[in-house]
Each structure stands twice: as structure tokens, then as C-alpha cells.
Length: 329
Image (tube, rainbow, N blue to C red; front, top):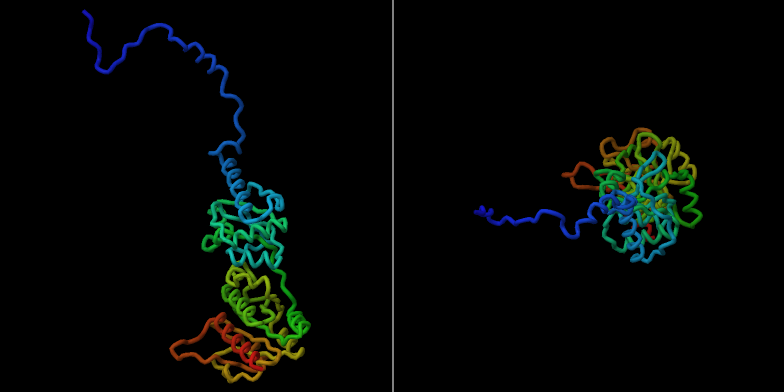
């Protein structure tokens, strides 16, 4: 008597199965040559290739010619001592418009292609600047973890400072009355960036920073200036006091900003003269030697509830007042 089978079990016929003879031969033949790394979608090289293809398509949408720029290479972005990184859409675009000699344009993968990014890509392509699409974490490492890079950055050579007296010559050559800002002990790059931006906005001709105990034109200053650093020259003074004396010899009046100044800004009578406005740090103010060198110390009237203004705001207020009084005359 046959034993009953298990429920759901299928009976298999022993012996050869029709059509199974080729399985062994296929196993012996192998799977063929291994695909290149860039042809494997899951491989890092394959992902970089796909990113480059997306970038090429994005450039096409932005109106850039496909063959105008250099082919981006699959490498991680690196910063060295001879370069600065400028990030942010306005800052990058202004730098490219001003023909700053950028070495590489970095675009984050899957970045939102607004008009600024499209124009930046177009300008970089026309200038032959290499364009490299990178993953967002790599771009964040390049620009600084706390930087808001908006998915775009460029590397530029270290800033080339002008000579302080050249700023006066440039203004005179244009038939304009020189208006400069000098910093005394300002160490915050955001203040420098804000002052550069205000100088450009109110018709100033340049900013002077001391070589020691002062901030220079760093990436943070570029960022805060919103691109104005590409249009407004910054000069470096080996010795600020001596530089101010040299400017006075050229007919430039030196005004220091200080809360205890003898002249209130609204009553300033020197606005139509060649001027350099000296701004001190928020904590220490103007140094003694710089104060003694100034032709006048000017104060900005503020509410008694506020102790002082930071350097960026104080410079902006003074520049506005000078520009306003010059426009009236």
C-alpha cells in the first residue's frame, strides 16, 4: 500500500530532465569580461561619470556650449595655501563677472539651476575654467562646514593687494574726489566684507587694512561682501600710522570714528574733501597713534541704550552721510 504524500509536496521524477544539459556548459563559459568601473552604476567611478553627464546636460540648459570648457576630472576638491575659496551664488557670479582668475568652478550634485548658477556655468565655460561637479559633503568640506555655499564655489588665487597711494591716484584719474576707508584693529572678516560692500555702495574708492593685527581678504570676507571685493580694491599698509601720514601729504583728510569724538557726523564739514575714514575695533576703538594722526575725530549720535556700533555698521553710516552731503553740493 502506497504511503500518502505530504500536503503541498510535488513528486519529482528521477533521471535526466529535458533541457538541463546546457547548464553545465554555461557555468564553464563564465560571465565574460568584467565591465569597466565607470560603466558600473553602483561603483564610485560610475557615479562620478553619471554626475558629469548630468552636469553636461545642466550646462546645455544654461546656454553654455558643450565644448567650451575643460572636461572635469574625477577628484575631490582641495584647497591649498595659495588659493582662496569663494562660495555663494552672488559672490561667485560677481567674481566671474569681474574676471577674477578662478582656477576651478565647483557645483554640487543636483543643485537647483537658477539663473545665477546658469550664468556662472556659462561664464566659466567661455573662460575655459574647469567645472567639477562634486557631492555636497565634499563641497562643504572645501568651503567650511559652517559656510552656506548654496551649492557653488570657485577657487581663486590669493588676493592681490593694491598700494594705498594707488587708491588715491585711481580716484583722481577718474576725476573723482577720493573716499577711502581704513581699518584699525578690525579682525572680523565679516566686518571687512560688510565694509567693502558699503564702500562700493556709497561710491568709495577702496579699503586699507594694516599688515599686522588686522583681518585680510579671506573667503569669509569675500562671502560677506557679496562679490563687491571683485570691484572694490583693498590695499595693505605695512604701517597704518605712516600710511595715514603719507595720505595726508597727498591732500587727503583723515577722519577717525569714535564715540567720544568732538564732531558729530551730521555736522561734518569736510565731506566734499578727499577723505579716508578710519574705523577701529568695536572693543578697543582707535589706537593711540592713529588717533593722534587723525585730522578730526567724528562721532555717530546713537541712543544711550546702545553702547557702540560694530565696525561694519559704523563705516556704513559714515559713508552714507559723506555720500549724501557730496550729492547735495
